[in-house]
Length: 118
Image 1: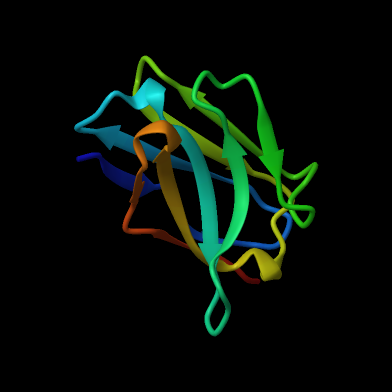
Image 2: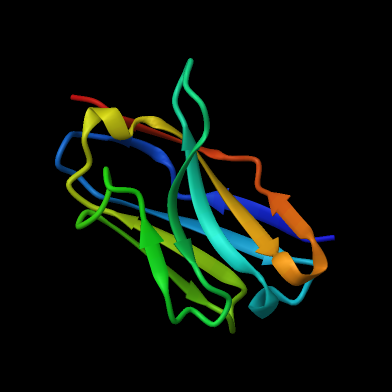
């Protein structure tokens, strides 16, 4: 069982930056592909960014390409989401997810609120 704890959310003005962290425990972190999702009120949860287990490949939603960067530190069992040039439409609860596809295992964090407003 993997536990995921997100942190780093908060209130930021448009154009500002935030760095989210997701710390994992209880499993072999390097086996898991990691991703960030977000869910705004009244909307479905959507994939924001994904990074493979060794960290050699990433993928982003079109809406965040060029502004967000996902990275991981397997030695610290942590995945990050650097968010720059934030827009009000980025306001949402951000969740991290760990997936070990070969074992059919997936885990979610509890989420962290990001609010972009002046």
